[in-house]
Image (cartoon, rainbow, N blue to C red; front, top):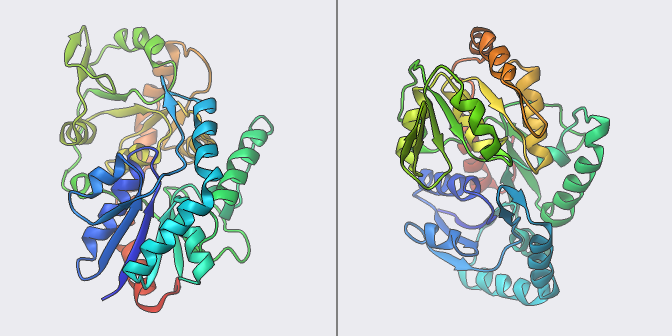
Length: 349
C-alpha cells in the first residue's frame, strides 16, 4: 500500500474528474488531496482533502479575466513561503510515498524541496514536452502559455500526458503520452447515430452563434445555459452529467470549444467535432489536430457563416470513417503506468 499526495488544479472540471477517476481505481492505496474550494468540496465527498489556495484562471462571460487572474496569482505568490510551509506540514503529517500533481503549484514545489518522487498527470504539458508546428499568428500565445506552464507547474520528476493526438516528444522529456482518461459514466454508454446535434456553450460569442443553429434543419440540444426551454429546433437543457453524456453518445456530431474532456469524450463515441477554440493555446492545438486527423474541423473568428455547417455536414461520413474505434480511452495504460510509479517511484517504460 502506498500513500499518495495528490494536488489538483482548480480551473474547470477536467482536473478534478481525472484525479478522482485515478483514486477510485486504486482503492488499495491511501490518497490525500490538496486543492482549493470549491473543488475540495467535491473531492471531500469521497476522499480526504486539505485546502490550500490555487492559481486559478478566472473565466467571466466565456473569456479569461486577465486582471482578476493576475490579481489572484499575485495574492498567492506573494505568500508563497507561507503556503509552501503549510503544504510541507501536510506532507509531514501524511508521510506520502509519492506525489501526483495535476497542474497544482505547491505539490510540485514541495516535492522538489523534499525529494519526494512526483509525477505530473495532466494534458497541459503537451505544450512543454512535445514538438509540433506553431503558426506564426499563434507563436506569442504559445510562448506565453508554455512559459507559464514551465514556470509554475514543471517541477515534477516525470510527466504522464493525456491526449487524443500524439506529437513527437522532446529529447529527454521523462514523459509518456497516453490516450485520454475517461470518467466511468462515459464508459457506461454505447454510442448510437441520432439526428440531433449536441452544442456546448463553452466559447465566447456563443450567443451570437444561436441564429445559425436555429436555421439548421435538425434538432440541436444546447448545454451551458442554466435553463430548460425549447426555441424552435433548439432545446436548452440544464447541466447534468448523465443527460449530457446520453445526448452526446446519441448525437450526430458535437459543437464545442476546444476543451480536452469534451473533445475526448466526443471522439470516444465516434462523433465528429466542430470546434471553436478559446482562450488557451492548448485548445488551438487540439483544434488543429482535429482538422489534421480529419476528426472534425474548427473555426476561428467572430461570426461564422451558415455555409460553415453546410461544408461540415457534407464531410460527416469522411470524419466518421477517420475516427478510429476504441482509440480514445487510455485508462488501462495510464493505470499501468501509475501502478508502477506507486510501487517503484519511477515512470517505467
